[in-house]
Image 1 (spheres, rainbow, N blue to C red):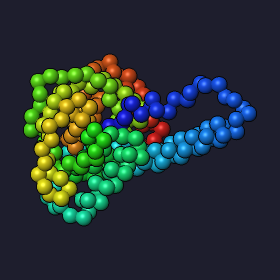
Image 2: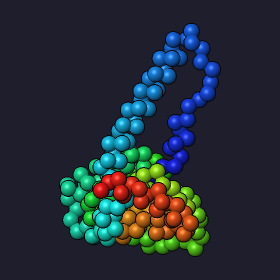
Image 3: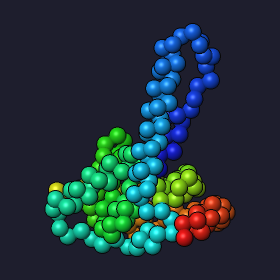
Image 4: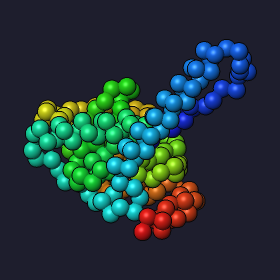
Length: 208
Ligand SMILES: [Zn+2]
């Protein structure tokens, strides 16, 4: 899932430039350069994430049975890609690995969950805008439970249970959907779905 708040961090300030002040211009150049590098890193990360139309995004991922170094390497690669792509969550199927593993950022902490299940979902639901690292810039409203209890296994094989609410609850519902081959276009309202499809279809044609 993408981080919608992120866009706000990169707005350019319309302050008056004092052109005699060399240091200000230097800082501005440096900031622009860092921003360009961050954009480039993001593009490289996105290029490694499967995009809409890729059949693997529609597959149901398999339960993990072996907790080994390979699994740890997978989780580490997913953490890295999630951060470089400015995401708040990433499922293994999004990088073509058909295993029930996702990573997400839980209020600042990186968490990897293996074989996740929603043990409990609260009765309250909320509609909010979601994006997806596999759907480019497309955003749409999605209804989710406000509170969930997530059970699963950590990378080292230890059972885990997380009680989550708000954004974290939303992110894990989004990532769990990925492991069942479900995308936000399946969850949004018909009008938003039509709009999203109109944006996604030309991308499909171009990629052929
Ligand atoms: Zn997604």
